[in-house]
Length: 432
Image (cartoon, rainbow, N blue to C red; front, side):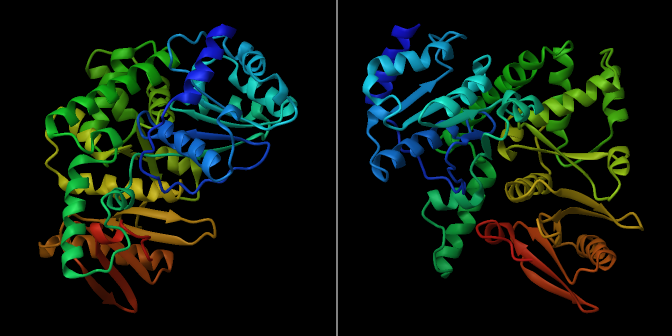
């Protein structure tokens, strides 16, 4: 194994790494803390590591010999490889030990058993910095927080946001001329269709759907069923299909359990609860609870579920998603999720619903409604009345409705609702 690792280290030092597009992830590198990048499969984590290597070489002038890159999805690397890695590297460069800093870039490290102990050990004993990527729940478990003992910082990477998508197309931060306005609108149309996975952006519809479906199968089988040794693998798949077909809808644990039982699966509520947690850990689906100070009330009420990528869901849904409002709502959710995990849906005392209420680090609350369009007077009345009612209860003066293309301002009793098109609001920071 030592000889193989030496060969791989040298090979990757010579490998011309693709630059990719710079992501908007605002990460920091802290000395003596492992940098851990987590996220769903194929969202761009490897490319981000390549970009970190490029910065090390160009900005910090780090020699390629001081950088160790390994991708642990390489089927030649055995599970005990980490035991030989330090020996392999310093047998190539014996004069560097304890004299020069070495940068270990370890891609998909969750494939290796005992990686946490290895990283802790080299941070303690070697002159090094460590960068890690991973796409499964193995990098999210509570055990890791304990075993790493505060020796790491974790950063989340998602598929491209619309802001990144627009930037990639050269349309970000341009003056809002009539021409650029049209170009940005067209860009959002494109994003609405293609989604944010980097590999599919230049593919036609047929190939994109095929690639999405392959992603979906890998997430379910490798990151969930195999990882957790699920004793009802088909139930895991069927429940995922249920959520895929009903993005942004309310789901209770009892109803989901009844659904699986109606299909012949002898599943307990405990299993269904675990399954929903697995989806979340694998970055496939995200639960959103009702807004309440009571955790028991949050748990007792149905939850909404949103997907990692709206276009992925369209590709795997067993029915054609004609409800564009659900797709837009998923896009807005993922925009908010990049900013905070404190996202809820809101129910007024009269039972009216607002799609999202977020709470930032200062405790400031923001209410956001999502509606594909507001052409129908009944739609306007429904969306605004719920929002105004929630604003009154939460003592907020400003609320937001995000639409596909409508733009307006509605004022009532000293309160203001800003109606903002998604192509404009999501290409910048929403101003509440």
